[in-house]
Amino acid sequence: MRDRDELDALRGRVDTLEEQLATARKELQDHRDDDRAARVEQLERQLEDARRALDQLGREVDAVRGRPRRSLAVPILALLAGLGVCAMVAGHALRGPAPDTTDGVPGPVPASPPEPVPAPSALAPEAAPAPPGPAAPAPEKPLRRATATWQAAVARATGLPLAAGAPCTVEAELTSSGDDIRVPSLQVICGGKPIYRSSDPLNGMSMFSSGVEEDSDAEPGTHVYLLSYQDKGSRAGERAEVSLDSARRAGAVWRDSAPAYRIELTLAYQSLPVAGEPLLDATRRALRRSARVTESTGPSPVKADARCALHVAPLPRGGKCRTRLACGGRMLYGAGTTGVSECTVEGDHVVRVHDGNTTQDGGDPALDLDVATGRVTVRDEEKHGAWTVGVQLDPAAGEGQ
Image (tube, one colour):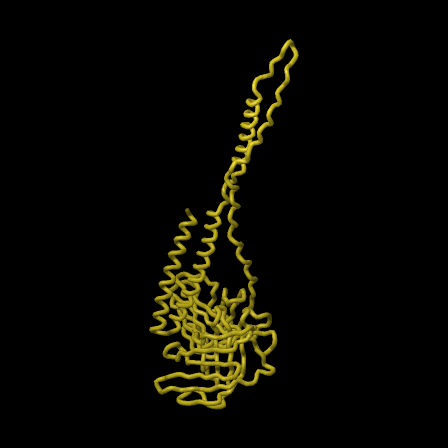
């Protein structure tokens, strides 16, 4: 009964999360901002966890309902023994009375008919073997771990004695089983003291989300990380609120309860290099190429001959990649949480990326990448007019994927 109640409760939670996610996606489509994007990501993670728990509990209930049926061997043996006794009684009756004797001399004794052998009865078939139990779940992949550090500086500070330009660091513990990266702990340190720690007690509510991207660094065997981290909500107690986005090079830590303060940060785009194996399986398949702007039309944000850096990383869900194209010091495609689009991966190589929506429809410009020709086209429509940028990838010799 308890399993059934838990199953019904989980089904209800999945339905509720699906409704909330649909509403949040619609709100994000109507009013695109970071808070709504973070809420959609949080609901997607919660829905995934709830579905996984529902699937596990369903397998456990199926295992309980699938107990082996009672064996019929004992009734069949009893039936065979009964048939044997009946055959013996019938044989004794067929022998008849004892033969007569004359003057004490026994007469001829008639031959007794052979005892009938009981014919095999049409017995019920043997019980079918019990159905196999549920397959054992695949063993969990071992967690890979890393500690990453982002350099930062105070942009503005109120409530704490921190001057503009004071150095800060963001330190995060990262874990992954190969598919995505989670952030179990994080702290922000300014002036030698922590102004945010995820381990501090929470007295209130938390709208939490995190996202980490991994890229290979120039030094072989090292990797760098982009970070998005949100822990917001009305609260009291020790834990402050925080919002960090290294792709936007910005962050903030604040607390509304006494002692109240707010620290705005400039944040490094990537972490300091971390030595060791990559956390993500997809990192080995990422495409990294330098490039050059060959043409620029309309009010485009970059000019011809500007140098570019392209990074395309396949995502765990098939058929999708996250693409970033920076030219002339500007993120031309993939700023912030955008940059996810359709892609084709053959073997371990990205061969094509396509995004047909402009900023008005998809949050970032349209992009088409054909690795075979080395051609990238980015276009968009803004209030000042439409623009197009053509980019040519540098030869891959010596760079690889």
